[in-house]
Length: 193
Length: 170
Image 1 (cartoon, one colour):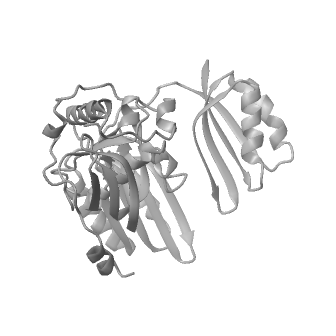
Image 2: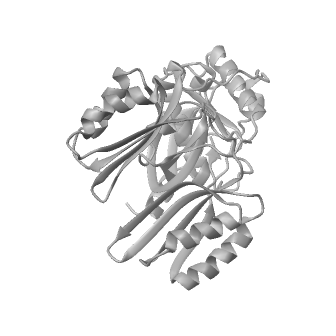
């Protein structure tokens, strides 16, 4: 199917009126877990997005993400919780195309991925390495919002699409190290924010 | 515990990595950082290990080179650890018709601007010569260096690009 037809076929919806305030909790900043912690290498469990514990976890993810300079996404396994929940916010990032602001998704899955592009990624859970990883630059993701459990369908491009794939991978127990382009595609990280 | 720098090179065949790594593991030499690749049919390994004394490793690796195929060297090195990042990370790519002195000329220009090569690969493919290098550059030097590289590249009749190796924290 041509890309234009795909674009016309999907609806970007569900995030309207959703803000972090909906979580009703400022969240607390939690320590970020680094590899080789086993929680980062195990597929996380599906969650009930209406469970108050999941809502609290969502608030903690946002608080922890916001406390870390340059961080544009954080998944529950990164704070030691094996749950399929992550926060993303690429607002203001120079490579961002679509920007949906701050949001948290539960049980997210990729339903369409296309236009694969290489890019160099770093991860708070792998603090000293970066790697070249190919990701879809156009992505359709479905998931549920914490609190209401309302289903969401997100159409993301560019850097936001990359961030979503990185976080969905975390929930599946995968690090960017599992997807690097080759033996010479891992580097010592040189820029610390 | 001593830190050792080990090199192994020889005609490529299956099993070289396993044989070298088994010798090191048997001696309790912990392989830390290494790079191993095939260059024009030769398998080349450069390893840093922490563990026993150099002469012990040298003796243990000796049987591997007994048939005259693999060349191994072992040397004790200072354990300096990772150097802190000195500059800004860039990727340099050079390609063009092969001729003598491309690497020498380009890396001399880098050095004159305080650029430090941290990784460099060259390939000759038919008539095409390629260099890809990771370099740390002093802050604010990339613009002037790129201009100078363009001049030098014109003299060598090669194309050169210098781009920032941005990594995005996710």
